[in-house]
Image 1 (cartoon, rainbow, N blue to C red):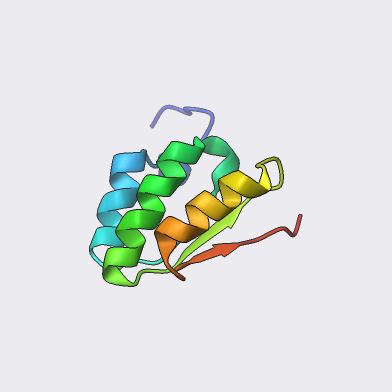
Image 2 (image 1 turned 90 degrees about the vertical axis):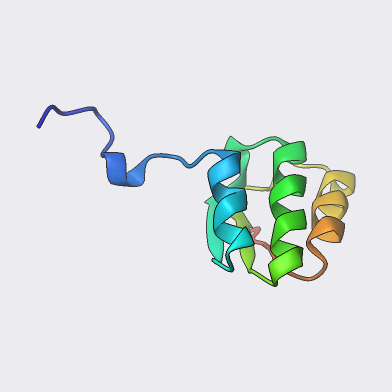
Length: 84
């Protein structure tokens, strides 16, 4: 098997893949710095529909307004992790 630098099992999921996971009830923890605010809002909205838990790491660079927007779409399903 060829070395692709980063193992396929650790490849970043697309927004559509994450939406699908939370839509089926899967809880996820993601590096939020890899996604736009609009993408995170979309994921949060779908998690709220199923009650799936979403933990966002690497979120420190977002404004408070962006965080409030993401959290509001999640309706209590989003955890914002400020730890490093």
